[in-house]
Amino acid sequence: MERQHPDLHRRGMLALAGAAAVATTQWQGGAYAATRDTAKLFGTDVGTGKNVMFLHGWACDSHDWSWQLPLFESKYRVVAVDLRGHGRSEVEPPGAYMPADYVADIEALISTKYHGEKFIIVGHSMGGQIAALLAARRPDLINAVISVDGSLGFSSDLVPLFKTTAHNLNVGDPGVVGPALFELFYDPATDPAFKRWHARRLQGMPVYVVRETFGPIFLGNDQVGLGEASARLCKSITVPFYHLCRDPAQASRMQPWFSQPKSKVDVWYHSGHWIMQDRKNDVNAAVTAWIDSL
Image (cartoon, rainbow, N blue to C red; front, top):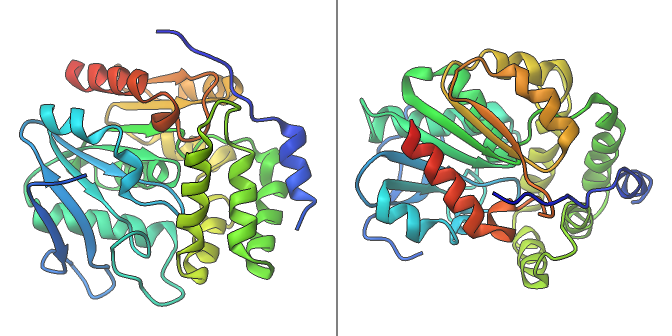
């Protein structure tokens, strides 16, 4: 398969650091909420075959997978979820947007609504990190993980960027800071309509959800998005893991972390952070082929 080169430049990232589907079945509710601390999630459940669950990223929702759902729903049983505070799912009060909160929701969903079943989880960005954390914590619930430019394996030298971004989100307007961050992660060929959609969706979210969610992905004692903490997490995962990313250095760093024989790390060039939107047909072919090989 052809691979092309990413357009994420360190110079642009440092510049930011210095600047201020129609479903046959759908569910919404708390029947599967294991504790009062888990949120009521909205999602769709369509198709038959292997269980596949889609998790979106920060300030996004399950519509991000609209270019995957028709094909995947024709081949598998597909559950597409809006995470807490995102999309049509329950908005929890402030203080409830750590990665562990998101993981607890998905763990409760699978353990209760889909009791006794296991899932292949496809996660984008933050959703890839949530999937990895859950796979490490509850491998009995997970058959495999596909991480689409998941928030894993970043170099520790990006800490200043992430700290400044978190600060700017907290003191400034997330509706300005968030889209400016996104701009650094697009490819020149990314459709401008996608950019407008991503920005408007973030701007429609509760401000505190946007602010509180970002920092813990990469910062703090419990972060697993970068450095040795990310390596320890990935090395602990025993299920097959397929990581798609745009940075060759990140791919080279991460390849030795996965010991399961069917795991792999691929570099995808000339694509923005939303690889599954910029190169939908290639992603669909690669991911379904990998799932079918399991």
